[in-house]
Amino acid sequence: MLAFILRRLAQAVIVMLTVAFIAFMLFQYVGDPVTNLLGQDATPEQRTQLRADLGLDQPFPVQFARFVGNAVQGEFGLSLRQGRKVSALVVERFPATLELSLTAAAIALVLGIPLGVYAALRRGTFLSQAVMTLSLLGVSLPSFLIGILLILFFAVTLKWLPSFGRGDVVAIGQWTTGFLTVDGWKHLILPAITLAIFQLTLIMRLVRAEMLEVLRTDYIRFARARGLTNSAVYFGHALKNTLVPVITITGLQLGALIAFAIITETVFQWPGMGALFIQAVTFADIPVMAAYLCLIALIFVVINLVVDLLYFAVDPRLRVEGSAGGH
Image 1 (tube, rainbow, N blue to C red):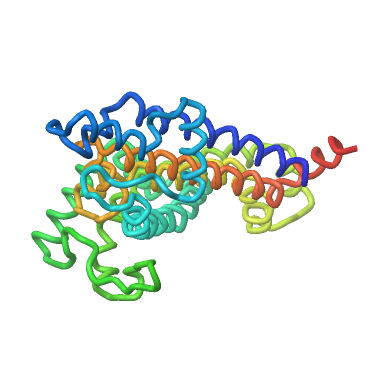
Image 2 (image 1 turned 45 degrees about the vertical axis):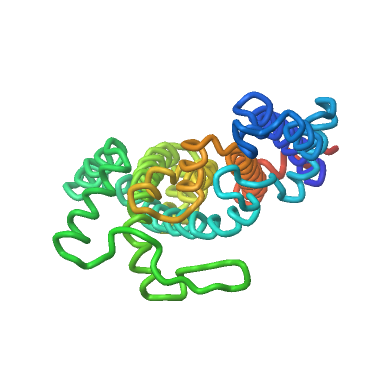
């Protein structure tokens, strides 16, 4: 187990160094930070002085080492557009994105797994067919269209829910959350549902397919031959083995929710990292783009490590293989 964790950590370090190198190259080849900070009218002396202050006159390896050292501390310099520290912008925006993504992931899991199990166990029934038909719509429709339709129905027509913004939030230190206010929950519902629908349908269809596959295996037949009840067979044996690939997809999709919530945040004017990244791309704000790239890579690396550890908890075959490999 320890050797497995060390191998994964070594792989994670390599991945993060690769991503850091890509982010560092943004500073080298996308725009000129000196021109962005001083403007076109700066004198050659001012440009030379600023390049020295930023360390841009140093050799390439020295600049990259300094960039990695600062990135480890969460420092990516100043935003070229807002003139504020990038780390402060991330601390300000990341809670909104994480809150939205976790809520969407919870909706997808709480609804996706039971619906997938039902569609597998009751396949051929009218309700099961209706669920699968609706899942096709969820997979096919783009997120921005789903968001617009939800706004039109629940915000414009029924006037039940707000259509944009984050609502009232509570500050806990530097962290802000809307989970502690009624208005925050009202603003969260529509964007969370919009972001969750694709993941929900994906998880539901995956659970159904895996459940049907597991139910055809020999050990399920043996469990039935031993006289176990349907509930014991379905939920004690079949579902547990069905969840192994589901864990992988769920982990990756959680990272995708955080990374690709850009469209949903734009539709609902949600003040998260996605909206910040769109602004950074529009104005070629390289420090913000580099910070976003490194942060998303770190999230994926951490999630993948957690998923690998969950495999050991869910699938006993991996523990046996790991023990055999160690000996």
